[in-house]
Amino acid sequence: KIQKMPTKFFLVATVLAVLSANGHAQSISAEQPEDWTDWASVSVAWEHPSPNEETDWIAAFLSDWEATYISWHSLNESINWDPSDTSGSMSINLLNGRHPYEFRYYRNNDIIKTSNIIYPLGETPRQGHLSLVPGYSNQMRISWVNNISNDQIVYWGTDINNLEFNSISNDIITDTYTNLDFTTCMGIDEIEPLSESFANLSIHNNRCGYNCYDDPTSSQLFLDPGYLHSYIMNNLQSGIKYYYQYGTNNGMLSTGGGINSFIAPRQPGDMTSFTFLVTADAGIGAIPLEEQGSATHNDPPINGADQVYTAMINDPLTGEDELILLNGDISYARGWAWIWERYMYMIEPLTTQLPFMVSVGNHEVDTHENTLSLASGGDSGGECGVTTMKRFPYFNSLQEMWYSFNYGSVHYIILSSESPTSNQITFFNNDLATNFNRTLTPWLIVLLHRPLFGSGYLDELDLQLQSTWHHLFVDNNVDLVLTGHAHYYERICPVINNTACSTERDRPIYVIDGSAGAEFDPTTPTDPSPITEYKDFDDWGYSRITINNQIGLTWSHYHTNNEIVDEVTLPPMNWGQEGFDERENK
Image 1 (cartoon, one colour):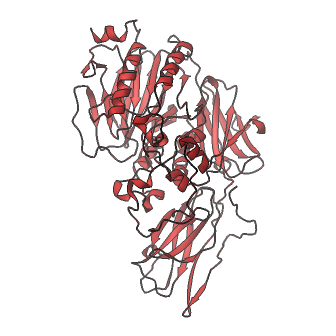
Image 2: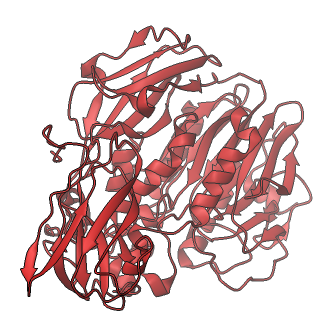
Image 3: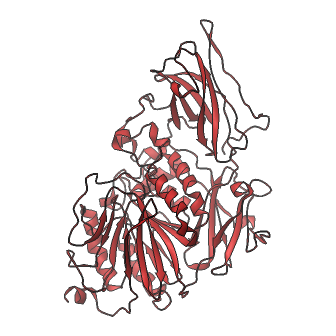
């Protein structure tokens, strides 16, 4: 499916393509990295009779993806190079995304020379992430990607030196997707991937503005995602530490032969204390307007998402956390497929230890053909939820991107702010009637991407969500409603009459936490409102919830220096039977 490195390749693949031009050589070549399983520093050498640092540049391309480059480099990045030199070499750091690379020497928009092809180890199992299996508290799913369609295996057990269980090959689910899946989801004619590069590649900043992120984008920039494998480990003993590996049978296993671990999920009714992480609007692919569709999109510099995930990994308390929730706007790929490769690699150190559960936001779902007219637009770059559903296989379908699960003493309901609410209201009511037992799970937490309340601007869809859901959340004694979408942090009081704070704990508190890395929005801070308890602009961060059934639910928000900047504890409640109207009119 994806071209693999020929066995006849040696360590150094310096097949020079040489062109005679007035007796001078023009060439570019690359050394083949050894054991290329993740990032590799690739040595690239070039030669030109009259190099020009103003017009000449080097591009790293995937050899089977023509639309645009992965990264670009000026000649002055060459090691110890002087403009009078007619040759140079540089090291380029590149990710193993399964696809082979080639390098091109450009003068303005013209290709002067193309290098040999170099090959990462595409069979490497990457992008590993755990997830819970909604409805089953004795299972854990592991998902990964490589370029091998079959003969995958998972080993697991409670003894790191004896992984006594292994998967049956037929039980491993393998999936993928194509550009046709995007247009089928949108109900429009197929859009073919670009067969030629952008015409203005040498403009290394804004090439197309927001037109770079619209319904055609995911198809035009389609990149084969490889084979998406997943397997469910069964009959786990709650609270026990399990070790596991995954990958190709009799071939390459995860993390270069290393062994990962996780804690088996807690059963409903387990009243033991535990903690978990919460974040939203991660945004590794979110870049400023002036760089839309630019060189920095596929090769983003260290940004907010990197800082937030690094902070969570470095947080000494993360070793005690038991899951991570991401409340929509996951990677900000918006149709730029390489960003999914970058993002899934970035989160792997966390998500191979903690189950990773997501909701969908506008940048996963919204297209101009969306059935929810107020959420129609090009925000997903034409992904239409396909990429998210395929990569996170706990969603039932593109028409049902909501779900619930129990974990210990908490019942979680994940809703979609990007989908019509009628079916979700039915789901919400049925779920509470059949899957929620307040004796076993005394805490009820709801996640959806867009805010229902806040001191910033609320658009028509936000207000519609507020009028649809708030009274249901109050009626059903929801403890906490987590939202994102706005790229800052704000904790809202228990809201009464939409504009004031209740003096009793008789309704949920709302939190907006969209601070996980996307560009700050709005760029100018807005004032708190009468329902604001705490507001924080211009600082990336993440949050943690501690469940202690003697003390309560403690919400803590952190900056990337791992310091708590806001914290509140909700005491346990014996909820009464009063409805929304009774509580509003107290």
